[in-house]
Length: 182
Image 1: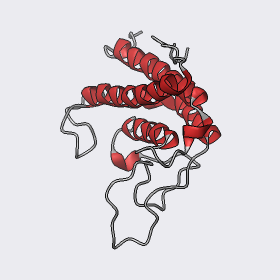
Image 2 (image 1 turned 180 degrees about the vertical axis):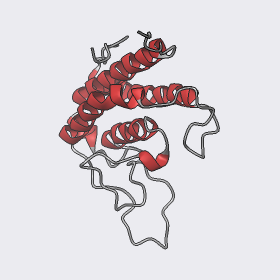
Image 3 (image 1 turned 30 degrees about the vertical axis):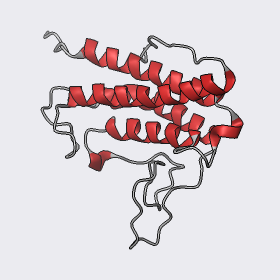
Image 4 (image 1 turned 180 degrees about the horizontal axis):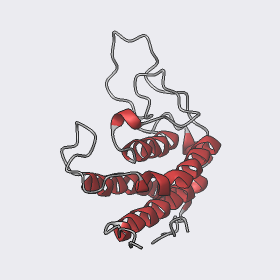
């Protein structure tokens, strides 16, 4: 009888999973607390829905082994110039709209919940010792890429939380860790 190989990266995977769950829980809380009047505020550089969707879209994308593995969320609006929800420069040669129609709070929460349910399997499928991120525009290893992904998610969660605090004088609860799937 042979012993099963030990996954030396199991503690790293578990830590990543816990931190993704915690970060997604904080994003969800910020979205739930976000003022209705600001959700689709046309005066903001990026409305609340745009920041939240952008954070989820890229978190989802960068949890893939490489760009070609990405399969958008079921309600994703792809037929636009900037499908992540944040406008970049318009392509005058394109007949497509610049941005998707605003996602509702319910849609964004559904995306966050769906992604949260997928996190453990997605992290388990990553080659964390790969010297390549899987994305040509990131010239870093896969483990570092996951740390960048978590920082990006938290950056946008903080933007939403700050808007909540400014508008409502209440904060978004800190989540230090959430358990990975048992």
